[in-house]
Amino acid sequence: MKQREKNKLFKESLEKYGNEMQYLLLMEECAELSKECSKYIRGLINDKSNPTAVAEEIADVENMIEQLKWMLGDVWKVFIDLKKDEKLERLKTRLKEK
Ligand SMILES: [Mg+2]
Image 1: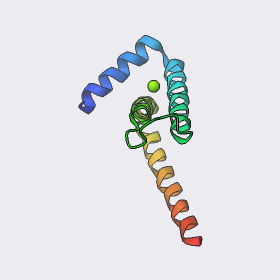
Image 2: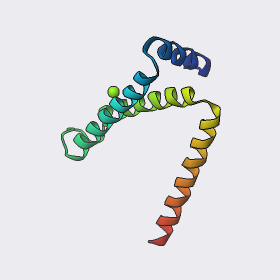
Image 3: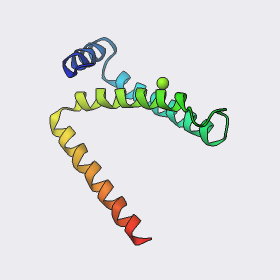
């Protein structure tokens, strides 16, 4: 889906359901992803080469993260990108230590 269409959906969802509901939905989708990851690790998913349920929940979480980033605006998107880079650099350093 094109960004313009996504932004229209984000706006409509925000207007219809409100600010707090978007945060709540992200929380719920994170919980669902967590549950599917747990089931995957515990071997409750028969075919580990086909983690469809995990992938579907990743899609839900990413959509909600996009919604919240859109709500927060461009300044916070820049902040988030900086923090992502910082945390990846920290990981790179840790991996070199071992
Ligand atoms: Mg879900």
